[in-house]
Image (cartoon, one colour):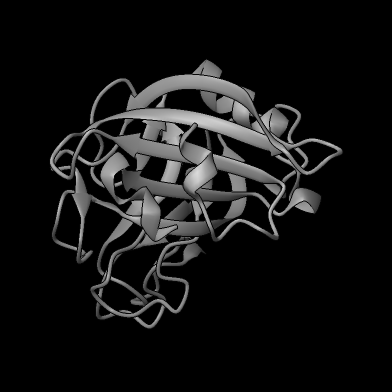
Length: 197
């Protein structure tokens, strides 16, 4: 199986694997794996979803409608509704919660709370149906300006602006399964590039 070619997950016990047929495809296969007591990866779920409209990016930038390729840790889970049962840190959002995407702001690629107070000129609203349930993909953690921001795993029925999406039921299923003690990671890649990881 595809997980057998992965070399960089030795310290991880949970894995979300998001793959596409090629760089330009926005339709993704999403699989979850967990190590059993013998250290062998077992697939826990298979589902289908979407990435950015123009597929995976080889060089991610704020202006592209693509998803980042790579291996990433996971940040906080969040949503408009109460914690669905995840062990991940969880934040219930309000209309005041945003994610700053203004490349000139010192708060670029971070969760902030209104009012703006001249701290940024653009930001993604976190209180919306796509984020009924979601979690942060820790892309660009150093917040380098213009390298891309607001990359989440969230509810979606079509291609995204750069995030990874699937049905709400699937997002909740993954959230309930995730356990920070098992050092979960997500690998996103065209299938032909999995040997990188």
